[in-house]
Length: 157
Image 1 (tube, rainbow, N blue to C red):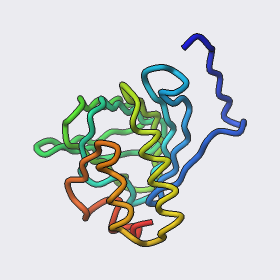
Image 2: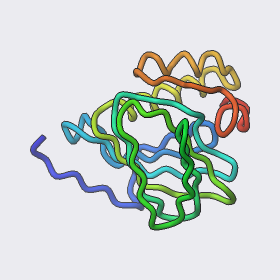
Image 3: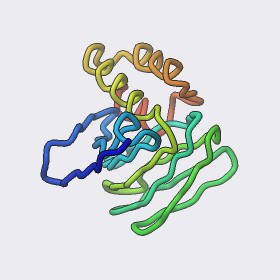
Image 4: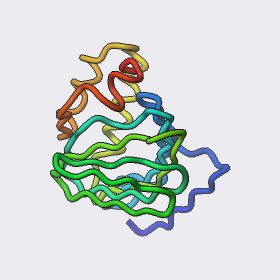
């Protein structure tokens, strides 16, 4: 891509809501030709369940505190912490208390399209967890648990 991308916080940005979490797309792979960038606002008790996908994902905690976990590791991340998950590594995160805001990056396309379709599916089929879970495989996302932070806590929509 040969165009400069500039996003102002106060301007009209694509913002999606899923399971109580708010995603603002700062740059999609369609725009960058490679990586994607997001601001994610995670509500108290929120965060995705254990999942994996074919892109690297990195987080920089701007505000609040999150607990990140894999199958065998858990780390508390406060404002100023950076956490990176290689592609294919199962991971989850949740707020430990209050709301948290993170800047997240993916190494290639996939997340923005997944967030978009999940958002529209949750709008079209509110509370229908089966419909929402059916979106994941279409974007090469494996949802490895359906309890814990995210899916059950927020009622599936």
